[in-house]
Image 1 (tube, rainbow, N blue to C red):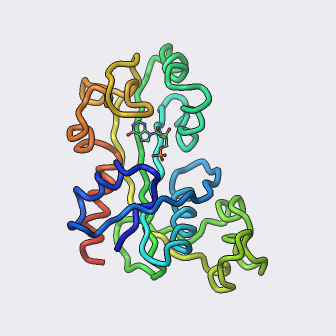
Image 2 (cartoon, protein in one colour; image 1 turned 45 degrees about the vertical axis):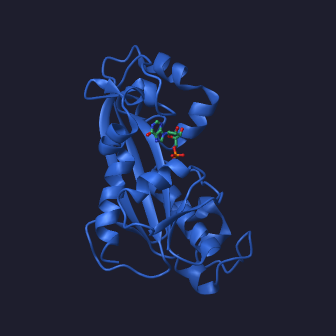
Amino acid sequence: MLRYVTTNPGKVREAESYLADGSVSQLDFDYAEIQAAELAPIAARGAREAYREAGGPVLVDDAGLFVETLDGFPGPYSSYVEDTLGIDRVWEIARDLEDRRAAFRCTLAYCDGAGFAASPDPVDRGDRVAAAAAGPDDAGSDGTPGPDGTGSETERAEPLPVKLFEGYVPGRIVAPRGDGGFGYDPIFEHDGETFAEMDTERKNAVSHRGRALEKFAEWYADR
Ligand code: IMP
């Protein structure tokens, strides 16, 4: 059974719509989120930690809003910025930009403890910068046990491979509109509607998470 590592049952329901009936369940596990400039190393590190917790196949996601002319801000810091500034302030920052193009991006990270045959979607093998940020558990061959006591010598020398699937939806930042959805949905417009104006089915059909889940489901069917 695949575990989707999230506190949000809505994400599991969304995953269920792409995967075979009864093949995914929720794992409410709070892995440590490292700081990094990209989503992939954050999700990959989370997947390794969750795999050690679950002892079986896990799927971790990390997502964010990337405003092009703000060099991708808030990007991997979307959650922190939502909690501190709030989306109205993000709109205020973006409103005077000539070019308000933006994208939601989602990275799904899958780990089942085994290696992967080559395919177009990338494999994270433990980026050294992310590993150093994450602490000794993933840090490589320094021989120090992880902070939680997990991770064998072999794992520390060769971090578990993690398969990555990326989804993307283009749009632009607009003044808040709509009552649905969550997070940045009211200020993100795609095809003339904000995500907060779309019903769940329509949003899922175009969303970054939906695109990543689609790629994952196609690959996972043969796993
Ligand atoms: P998470 O990775 O799903 O926890 O999302 C990280 C941040 O991006 C949070 O602030 C979310 O509110 C925001 N976010 C992720 N996906 C979406 C979305 O589909 N709509 C609006 N905000 C999102």
